[in-house]
Length: 312
Image 1 (cartoon, one colour):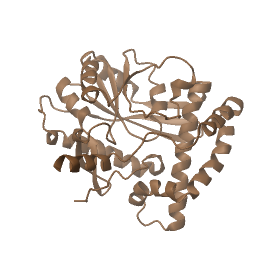
Image 2: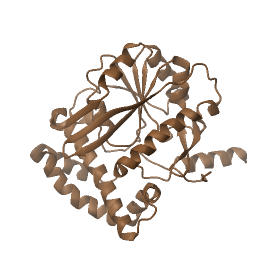
Image 3: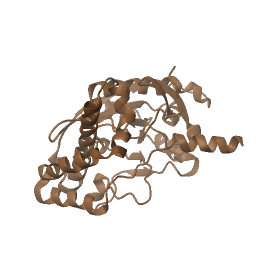
Image 4: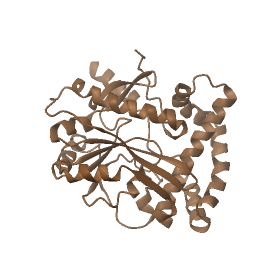
């Protein structure tokens, strides 16, 4: 009975999907507009598509989990407007992601703040763990890391049947990064450990669970409890690799800002107990919460990450 309950709890916690909405022909329509008319042509269609989807109660509900916490006093009309703004921001990011792959990274003006700091950390030879979240456009951020000589490895979970493409898939070339699947042996931990021992860059998501929920810790976030992965902090303790919070946000039309927000140094030899890594996961959550205050419509969370969690 306890095993079944644990599995049920795990299923509830994992109620999110990386699969994009929309059919293949709808995605292809945007790709065609980008090729023929660039960013603005795709944006024109996007306004209509986003308005249609925001009319759907199921879509607004997916937005409400986060937005109701970020804007607890919003009335019905404001809730609708907030949902539209959030969906539109996501749509523009997806268009821009495809734009980079189809027409080239030079179509966007991307400013990287903290480049020298990142280069110095990589030069130390202990490896670097970039912790991203579903904010701004991490793939635009990855596209400007071409100055990094050492290999970049991405921990990515992709579902079968997902028709949305990453930016490098539009160009028809080889993936510039090594992909590590969290559903592999031991959640990909052994691969990630070897990557850091070689002094390479490892990029992981820090805001939602991948794989087994046993690999998560409960932390405070926006007035409630959420479960987030702690493997990055455990790897940092084992290897001495610094953790870098990499944040991105869309500034305007074709302009993005990428920022090395903070470096989290996890002490060595903290052991195996997950509670040892909770303070560092909580530190990252504080960084993310501040980001949500500054860029409220660019945290692209569409599932209830607070479910079954009560606030302190």
